[in-house]
Length: 314
Ligand code: MN
Image 1 (tube, rainbow, N blue to C red):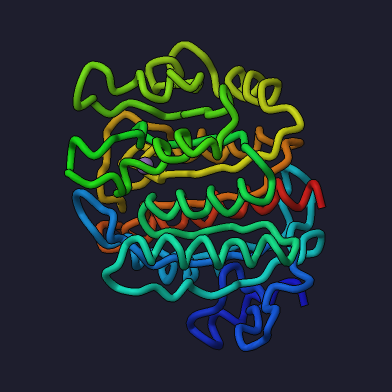
Image 2: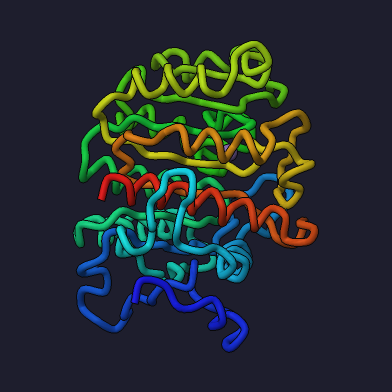
């Protein structure tokens, strides 16, 4: 069974991500045979403003039951082409943030060892760092598309802590998880804490595409540059939902006006077709701040686009 019938949602109330089969978590190799594993990470201990992203896996699971398998634009039957399973949530200790990162990295590594592609549903963006560590350990330095309103390259100077949801890309760069010149940051627009804020990632050759630049340059033009620049490299996508305008994604803890429309966000992911996606996360959805599940529906649609990209290469 690639995907349970749509009526299962009505019958059971809550179904796994996209009505997919669930991994047998009691098995010694729960992800064996899977091409993709969806993992929820109910963690928001790295949040600097409004918490609540820990509830995102449950909310996104619920609304993802509405998503069917066939992608009419790519003309691919996603869940028939790609064996995808719901790997459940990563069970995390409540207080020790270092241990949290270790546990996440270990779980994502287990997905990769099974030969599957991880699709991670945060949680706040601190979860991206252990994911990137695991994926880079398997594939080597990565090309990373980071869709976000913020750079996420802060140091400890702001909050007195080197690790929070505004820092994962800084660590990923300093730890050489990202190939030099292969960090593509899209959707940037937040105000800066200091005039040098953009310089850190730029020092590693990152390509920074702010909303200001997108006013002058269309999404297809941007995609052409990314596809050419990334080429055959293993690509990881970390998608902070706050890249999308709060009008389309109000359920997030650090909203910034003036972002991507939901259409542009979907168009953007679709346009990565042909690239070698080796992992993806969608983070910072905060259901308690959402209205009518708008943000959760978008997150599910973004994940589906990622799964479709993976299915095209399956
Ligand atoms: Mn972020």
